Amino acid sequence: MFFLYQILIIILLIFSPLIIFFRILKKKEDKKRYKEKFCFPSKKRINGNLIWFHGSSVGELLSILPLVQELEKNKSINQILVTTSTLSSAQIFKKFNFKKTIHQFFPIDSILFSYKFLNYWKPTIAIFVESEIWPSIFRALNKKSIPLKLLNARITKKTFNKWRCVKKFSNSVFQNISIAYPQNEETLNYLKKLNVKKIKKIGNLKFFNNQQSKLTKLDDTFLKNINLKKIWCASSTHPGEEIICADVHINLKKKYKNLLTIIIPRHIHRVNKIVNEIKSLDLNIVLHSSKPKKLNNTDIYLVDTYGETQKFYHSSDIVFMGKSISGKGGQNPLEPTNLGSTVLYGQT
Image (cartoon, rainbow, N blue to C red; front, side, top):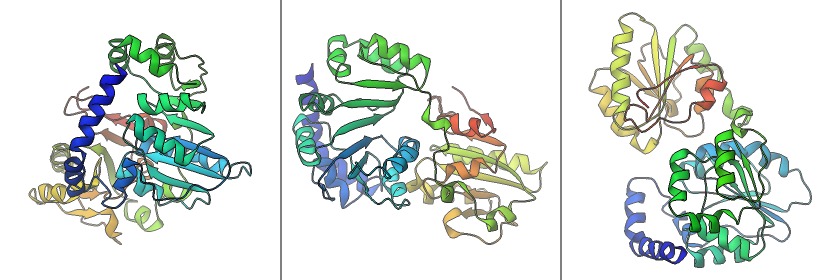
């Protein structure tokens, strides 16, 4: 099964130039740093102990920041490597002024790339976050006797059933994990059934305050502008949901004249299309990046930056979670729920 997996990766690599090209056109890929995914590093490895963290995207990155900040103070650690797979997470990382923590994109999970990556970075320990399970890099870590920890582990019933369909293969993958820290009871039970050797429950990292103060506090100008407004927020919206939220705004405004709808799209490369859709309804839309001084006549406040979602949850008692109208389950409601917001879903 591992051999078949490598064949599929090779096929992916054959088509990767075309895939990368289209992703760059769609602004989903860094036109310079995409080479990191093919194990061409843009940063240097310095001598000494290196701790490696890997998380898929924005949520995973933000959840480990407090831990990274603490490890930066540890004099026995010379360098911290954080890898993610998405452009949005890389852009958020730039907002933090770390002294010895660097960011690279996670390599394609080829066994050859995995060994090349590990031979260059030589991590003392690897810490993967949530549902990041990669057979090739896991195998390479085991062969090199590098401890692998699965932090804030999350496995859904759907994912578990997929792994159970290839039981022998899944055993060979999960046995490489030195210790797993599940975020809930469901994951704990699934990890046991997947034969993870050591499991310890410590709770969900996302319940902790996971952003620096500069990212969680809204500026005074914005707070003054929204002081007398009725606010609701649509978070992590997907195609088709923004126009629905705009229609909702029109209906709600018949009752609440001072209404402000905050829309935070999941992918900001869609901003221009969203603006055009909403303007077709004759609504006044303002971009967060324009740093408006006044919002008197604003209908829709469109957040076109990454990593600032949580600050808007603080200002809204009602949060609609995107990806739920399409029937795909919806984004994780943990953060707004933890902040006391009433969470709305389309269908789940």
